[in-house]
Amino acid sequence: MDKKIQTVTGEIKKDKIKGAMVHEHLAMNLSGVRGETTSILGNQETLPAISEELNTLKELGVNTIVELTNIGMGRNPGLLKELAEKNELYIVAGTGYYKEEYYPPEVVELSLEELAEKLTNEILSDMENTGIKAGVYGEIGSSYNVITPSEQKVFRAVARSHKVTGAPISTHCELGTMGLEQRKIFDEEDISPEKISFGHQDLNENIHEQLELLRWGAFIQFDTVGKVRYRTDEARIQNLLELLDKGFENNILLSCDITRKTYLKKFGGHGYVYLYDSFLEKLQKQGVTCDIIKKMTVENPSRFLAF
Ligand SMILES: [Zn+2]
Image (cartoon, rainbow, N blue to C red; front, side, top):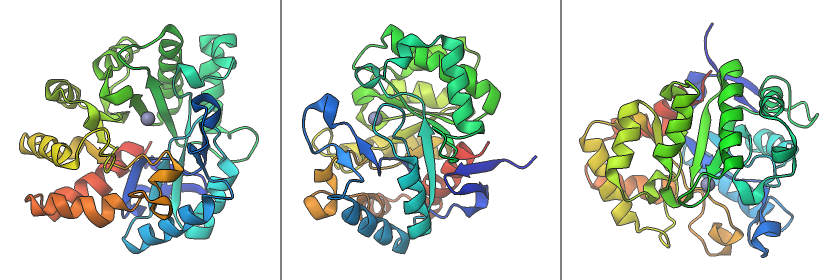
């Protein structure tokens, strides 16, 4: 059977993707845990700004957003569907749990098998009786320099559910840490690397770790493009060039991971659009070919997402 990509508005063929952002948030609320009010997206205040940027993205050739807000992060499948329809975009929604601080009580209360079954249901049936299916596990995370026991439980539940559904898995590595330890869990659960993408690897300044994940056959994400508070884009680009030089253009995915109101253009940030209206140009100036850019923004996301 031909593999399909599962969006909030239905299944699509792989070749429908013309430009993707693989790690974003459009409807999210982390303000409770963070104790502030800027980590809210998709509310009355931010929605017009988000819609405007989605429009600009369309003009830049981007038609696919992977929305990795999952259970406990204030996700809103109905709003994602509305945005997909209104802006004629493909949006892939996430299931799973983020990282320990954000876990709802069910992560502890349910057994590993029950958790896996719940996630399987979100992929095969629907999310919270909305009639809308998730199309990816993510972002599933570990904390800074540690994978806590409950985070391990989530990784194993996702792995077991993945064995039933085949859906792709996108991880959160806090400031780029713990990728190899995450891999170890997938290894123990006998999950092959083709459907796994390790997140925030552009914040991991240990290239040997990046290379080990790539050599294993997984994807890695340069998904905090433009967040120069964590790492300059010059350093990001040098790192990326080194990986491309070693021939890993088939396993790299790009995104901006917009998580705060203040990252939106309208509120003074670089916006979702930054990857396509600035960063790719910088890569081209450094000699990255259109062919390789197409791999990172179209072909790799298509291959990763289809199941
Ligand atoms: Zn993340």
